[in-house]
Image (tube, rainbow, N blue to C red; front, side, top):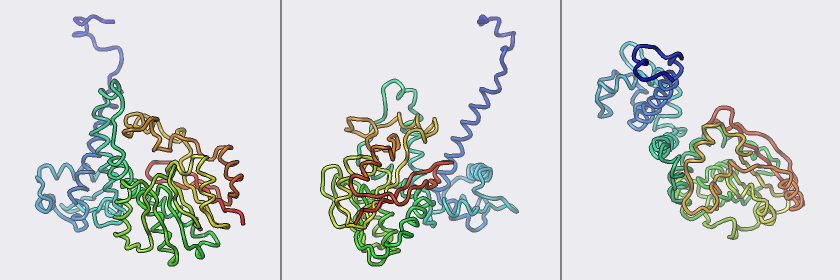
Length: 351
C-alpha cells in the first residue's frame, strides 16, 4: 500500500467513479422515496389533479415553496407529476396509486417502507452486530404488515385470484366460506360481493381482527363476520363450501390439511395461495428478512411463510390422503415486486 504522504501527490491507481456512482445512485433512490412519501402524505397528488403553480401547491399543503419546487422536480423525474406552462399536474400513475381519493392508494405500503428505513436500514451498522429488531406481534401484523398487504393486493393480485374462484362452476351455490388467517379480510369481502348469498368468516388472531372489521365497515360487507382464534389449536368451524388461505402458515403446514378437509362440505373447495419459498426473493429482500423478528417467536419468521417451500411432494400426498383433488394449479402475478408470482391451487373435496 502507498504511504499516506505519497498519496498527497499521486492519484489512486483505480478510478473512483464506480464507487461514487453507487453512492450517488443509492442516495438518489432514498431521496426519491422520501419525496414520494412526503408528497403522498401531504396530498400533493390530490391537489395536483388540477394544474397548480408551486406557490399554489405550497399554500394548499402548508409547505415551503422553496422546498416544494425541487420536490416536484424529483416527482417529475419519477413520472408522478408533469410540468406545463408553469404548473404541475398529477399523472395517471399518481392519481391511481398515490392520491388519497383513490381506492388503490398505496399509503400504508409507503408508510411501511419509511418505517423500514427508520427502523432497519438506518440502523444496519448496529443490527449486524446486536441482531434483528423485534416487533410485538400486534404491532407488526395489525399496523405494519397487513395494511400494506391489503393495498398491494388491490393492485391486481386480489382480483386475479378471486376471478379464478368466481370461475369455479359451483361458486354461485356456495353459502359459507372461511378465510383462515384472513388478516385484512379483502378476499372474503370480494367473494361476498360477487355471490349475494354467501356468508364469510375471517378467522384470525384477536389483535388482527380490528383491521378486518375496519374493511368490513368500509365496504359495507354485512355478510362478512370475524372469528378470533389461533388456527393451529382452535376450531375454525364446519360445513364450509370454501376454505381460503393466503400468505400464512395455514396453507403450508401439512398438519393443517386434514383439519381443512374436515371443515369442508363434500364438493367444497380449498383455495390456497402462497409464495413458493425463499428462492423467489432477490438479495435485498433476503437481507431485509434477517433484520427483524416478531417478539416472542421461538423460531425466526414463523409468521412469514415466504421462506418455506410450497406444494412439496409431501404436501401433495397430504391433500390426496385428506380427500382433496387438485383442480387448478397456476402462478398468479404479484405486482408489488418486479417478476414476483405466487402459486395458487384449488383443491376440491371428493363427494
